[in-house]
Length: 200
Image (cartoon, rainbow, N blue to C red; front, side, top):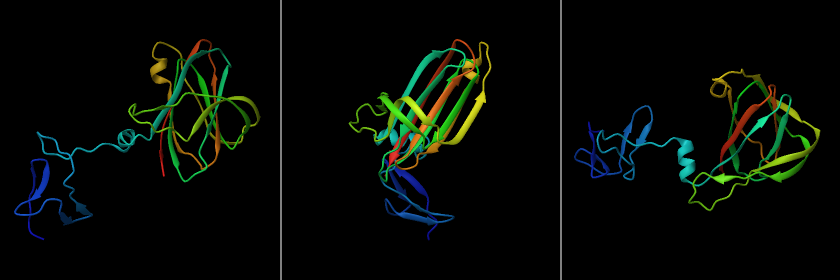
């Protein structure tokens, strides 16, 4: 291969003396230069979006959440159901607390679902809807298999910033998940948010 220099020419990648959109190397990995890549006008660097941001642009990223004040020993339970398809649900669960807390995540519970919670597509121009459901729980016969149990928290003016948990998981096909949040302080504001994207 010739000793080539990559240049950005009117939004395209060009090899010196050569071709747009060319296969330009065989280094540690082969690099395919795509004439549709976006470049920064100042530095000439390739503009790259992280995978989650890209999923938003594709219209397959969703969010659901709530905020409420809970009393000491008060619980909040809800159920996540993954679709019975080849679609894979990549989910991040984020929780913020004003005081002490316990978070529990169970797989394959036996329960009765209640009303559905609101789900938003993070691309407000997209008409896509989630195949994952988030619902309230009216009764529980069995918690199922315990996956995660996190206890923590503190009180004080900085507690809401410090008391945060992030859980990431790829949901199993056609499976239910029970999330239980327990407040271990009075007047404990709890904010939870589920962010996920769905890919085939």
